[in-house]
Each structure stands twice: as structure tokens, then as C-alpha cells.
Length: 557
Image (cartoon, rainbow, N blue to C red; front, side):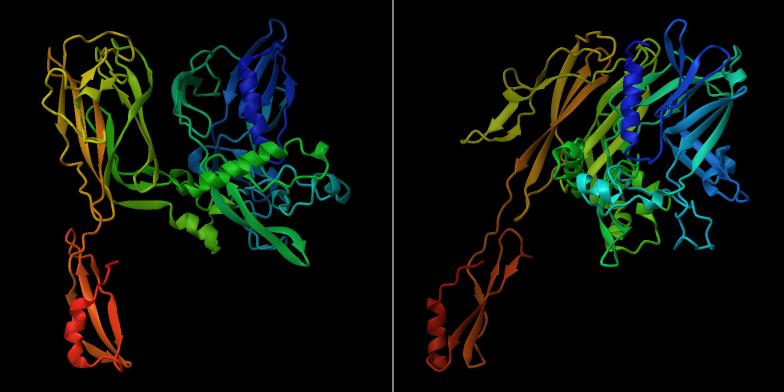
């Protein structure tokens, strides 16, 4: 077998999954068709020794299973079934192993549903266990004292993963390797590190039609780590150890603080794990990655407006992962759940761009538009939509706008706005207006600029404001809008403007003459400061106070 880019990619996924699931392997079996079938990540791959051909024949994305409670050993009691009749459903879990028995391919899909999951203790008979999946597997942990002196003593044990369950699927190889298949197009959504895609699969056996996969580029998700406070089974002075770890609910990626060994030979993965640990801390500090639930896209999909959001990767895993159990009253873990849904103070409009496309302009392009960033208040968001264009419609997502000539600047060279009259020499212009799909150039265009008064934000004493300008490219042939771009110009905060104070009458309090100076901000009458002035009543007579007040100087806050 020669080097294969597909296998290299799948093996990299498998290596990452080994840090999430405690017992997955690479297994292979020979079938009577002369091909070797083996598993890598969540794929079944065939290899033909006769010609060296390698192909992915089946992929497990969404897998549902039902548990047989009559089986004594729960870890072997799960078999695949339809989603409607399932007890559990998982997505993109790796294959733990496979084997061939006659004309059947027996496939075990790895999970982290464990014997203890849902039990209060080992002999808790009120629960069958396997109620949710465990997280935070620690691949470098060992309880062998001899090895701990080399690997370093760690608190995060893996006892909760004992007797983890596999979902067992039985594939009819005669059907899978046969020549009669009912192919239909399936869509697989994006996940961490993997783009969304479509491909043709047999509706009967799941066989993938070779060469039909079409990936939607730049749709892959990034990890979203949450802090998970976990209690371990290891103990110090008879008390169970506990610590904060980091888990990505969407894909299960996890990291516990790595322990560096005093023996350099034992630190082969330390630097890699330390880098993941540091990145996870930073990622978690940024908060949830929210998806708008009320997204409203502009007609040309260049902007999207929203106010209500939810963290889908967390919401989908409530009571399905140990880090998101609704019964968990730990403050850290409860805070994760309580912040899953969010409503902004007001709706925001953000820029979006086309990140991938498929098809031709003649037949109609299917484009994916995406917006991913942070709001001004630091809220992370990710929103995308797929749009099927009309036949003959072009897409102009890469138009370059030139704003410099229209810029209005102050004496220090700071931009304070943009001219909207579009006069020669001081106008916003564009480079070549070319279709992002087919490359056809639109020559008959005009550019207009307006100030978006709806998006204007007034400055306050303590917060900067903004002006928003929108440039629009329009076809002069039919007045069709081809592209838009917005520019924001910051307006400096006003700062407080306090004038002369208004004095209250003198009062004697605790042996001191006291008056209050009330300062009111001219920019905002709700901003009021009221410092007190006190003078020793034994040294100043009341008749002197009027003259004293006139000479007092108080610097407002």
C-alpha cells in the first residue's frame, strides 16, 4: 500500500480520538471478495491487494442504539436501531473495532457511556448505569506506582470509563459488496475540524458512492471549551481529589492539566498537551460560541441581524454528558448551563461573507454564507446559511471597495466620516466586479454611498459612538444590487462636563458644619456627583459660613 492522503487524514482524526475514548483500535478483516476491510476514525475502508485501490465504503455519522436490559453486562447490551426507537443517539463517534463473521461485518462504535454513569456508587441498583457519556479522559494516567515515578503522579484517574459501552452494528456484506444499490444524496453537517459535505449513499446498506463527496469549504467548527469541575476517584489524605478541566461538548475533545515528569524521556507528549491546555483556558475565557435563534439575513446575504442566541453545542448535550448534567449543583458547572441562552440588550447587524459554493451560475449556485466574530460587548457568535441561487444568477462576494478618496479627516489625520455625494476624485470606487464563481466581469456598474442612520450609535459620556456608511454596487443595466460594504467611523466618547456646583444649606453634623456641592453633567443630566464639604464648627461661626462657601473650591470628580 502506497501513501494515501485520505488515510493520512483519517489517521490524524483517529489519533485525536484516542485522547477522547479509552479503548479504540485499528482492526482489519478479510472478506471473500478478496478485499481487506479496516476501520479508521468513524470510517470503514476497503483495500484491494490486487490493484492497491483504497476506498471509504461506509461512514458512521449519526448512530442510534437501543439497550437490552436483560443482558447482565451492560457494556455489551447496545445494538444499533432507527432513531425513532432508540434509547441513545451519538454523532461522529469512532469505530472501536470490526470483524467479519460469515457474510456479516460486525462493527463496534465506541462510546463513553459507562457502567457508573448515573449511579451514585458502584452497587447502586436504582440505576442501570450508562445514562450519559463520561468526558475528560486522561490518556497519560497510570495507577501503577512504578510508572508514576516516570510519568508523574496525577489526580485525574479514568475509573469512570470502566466497562464503557460499544454500539454494535451488523452489516450485510453481500448487500454492501453487491451491485444493486439505491443511492440518495445525504447531507452531513459540519463539526469540530470537519467541513459539512454532501455525498451519495445507498439507503439500504450505507455504501458510499465513490467520488460523490462534495465538501463545503470553510464550514468546519472550532472547539468550544467549557470549564468542567470534576471530582475524581483518587484521594489525598482520604478525601477525593477534584479540579477544573476543559471539555468541548460538541466533539468531546478534552484536556486535563498535564503533569511534567522529571524524566525527559517521559515527556514526549507534554508540550503538545500543555499547548492544548493553555489554548483551552483562553478559549473558555471567551465564553460560549452562540448561534442566533432569530437571524434575519439581508437580501444579498452580506449582513445578518440578531438579538437572541443559544450555544447549540452545549444545549444539545444537556444531560447527555457528565459535564452538562442538570442535576449538578457545582457552581462552575451550573454557570455553564445558566449561560447557554443569551439575549443581547438590542439587536445587532454584522457582516457576513460567502465561504463556499457549489454548482455553476448557469444551473444556479448553492452558496454558504457565514458570519463569525464577537459583538462589541465581546459575545462570540457563529451563524451560517445555505442559499440556492436562481439559474443564470451571478455571485459577487469578492468585490474590493476603495474608500480612501472619500474619507473626511480632521487636522490630525483621523477619519471622521466619508463623503456621500460621489463626486469625481472624492468618491468610493470599486475594482473589477467579477463573479466569484464563474469569473464573468460586470462592466456596467455604479457605486452609491449613504449614511446608515439606523445603525448610528450616539456617543455618551462614557462610551464611544459610531457612524455607519454603506457603499452599494448596482448594475446600470437592470438596477440589480451586486455587492455592498459597510464602514464604521468611531465617534469619541463625550466625557463628563460638570459646571459650577449648586450648594445646599449649611447643617451642623457631628461637630462639623456640612454642605453638599451638587455637580450635574451638561452632557447627561442623570450623571450627578454630590461631594460633601465639612468645616470644624468650633473654629468657624455660622455667620462666617456664607462667606466661607463663596471661597471654597471643590474639584468635581
